[in-house]
Figure 1 (tube, rainbow, N blue to C red):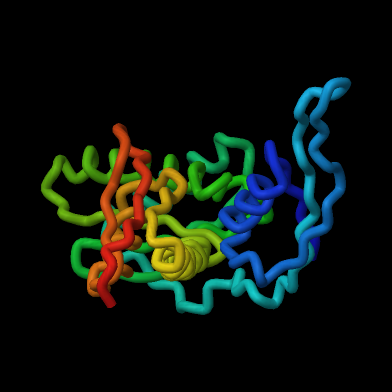
Figure 2 (tube, rainbow, N blue to C red):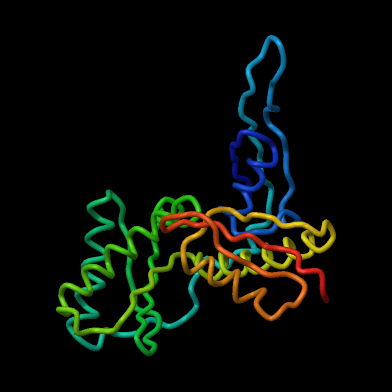
Length: 224
């Protein structure tokens, strides 16, 4: 399978491919389509790359069985999510996949899943926030449920990729005896980075920045 990405530099374009595909860099081949230009006669431009990867690495189909809605709340959440997506101009089938303590996980199946997920999951995160606001309103604040929306197992692929990024960055920090700042992440993703490296005694992590999307800095501690 082939997808194209753009960035200010080759490194930036590759990082976008890593984030959006949910793969590590060694899981796809990079073809440079247009190199950055700089110098006296040219302004610095963008770099476009083509990522070649084996789509069998993805598990797009959620194999978990569908659960029948048990109550009006679950039915309303499915209908609301489906209608919001329809009003966006896309068709989708929304099903309940898991019913855990204080958590409801819904899966979205659509021919436009890539658009619904968005770059770095920003679209599906925004949709998930909207559904959670709706859930809180119709339950009048009495429900403790947190709604999780997923599509093409994006959440799982993203988690696996973030764990790999955390571990590889930690090793790079140890080799250089310095620190490195990761890309901006939402609270859940930052917590995953902190948790992944929490038990290590050679590096430490801390969040930097303001607002919802902060960055995690991985810092060398100097002791194995």
